[in-house]
Image 1 (spheres, rainbow, N blue to C red):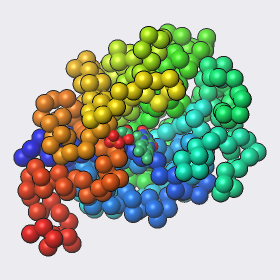
Image 2 (cartoon, protein in one colour):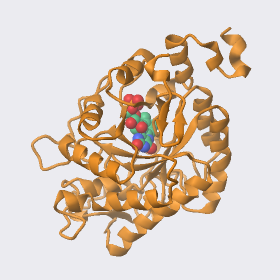
Image 3 (spheres, protein in one colour):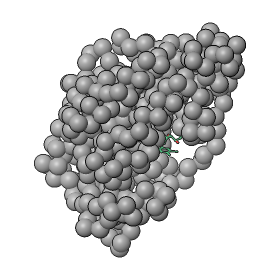
Image 4 (cartoon, protein in one colour):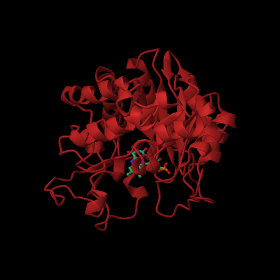
Length: 367
Ligand SMILES: Cc1cc2nc3c(=O)[nH]c(=O)nc-3n(C[C@H](O)[C@H](O)[C@H](O)COP(=O)(O)O)c2cc1C
């Protein structure tokens, strides 16, 4: 058996292979944040397509944590009930359903990408008539002055911070009720938790800003709240940006990421999903195949925790090599899974030549 198809034990959960669908926003909800037929078919197809883990898109823990009014949410029991048939289907296909729990912070209240990605101010609407809202930020002064290209921002006060922690806790409880087996805390890409981590966007002078200890406090408190309600036998992941890609500035970098990963592992996090960037328009991102893998590798070497690598993985042999060479424990695949929902089956054909990996309904096509 190739390394990519060797099951992975995380606590009592067995992940059947090392291929994960990377979280990808679909912007396909009504403003109520409930999943639609699109989500059922989109996530279901990737489960049929052989992914070991099928991770939802960034799923907002509270309404103002949505990037767009059309994002998925999990802020009520109705959301959990609506997601349950999707997780049941993923499990029936042999996959593990995961949910990415998110708060978009200052990057919230935007139009969908295909509507231009522009901010929607409170009191204004997007082309579908969905309303914008005031967004939350650790330090509004850390952003360029408001000139129409940013939604109105509120500095997170003590109540907001406690509210975010409570929202993550409640979201984790609901995710469990919905049948998810992995909870991933989204602390990457310039969204709220990353905004607190990075000195570029966190200018606070209270216990949530300044030192490494203070900037990482909110993420630690969120992780503790999630771990508190997430069962002992099920894993928690955290997605981080390994670096802000702002060389020569006082920014978030790989050394802080390794230190953070170690802290999080001690608090019961089982896997760090290492992405990068997304915080600042002046970032200098290298791109290309495996472009974030050195960051994942550094976390895997420096901290005692499993690691997910993501970014520029398009070929089964490439994914297998990442696991075989000890560079990652899980390989998350994003855009290639949009081009080919059956990437997992293709990988199994290329690497294992095992027709029984295909669903019985499709097997005559490959026998
Ligand atoms: C359409 C789209 C939506 C995305 N939405 C999310 C998201 O909700 N959460 C997240 O952490 N990353 C998101 N990403 C980033 C992907 O998860 C992934 O990290 C990135 O695309 C790099 O991997 P790839 O080269 O395999 O596509 C998104 C990417 C795409 C293309």
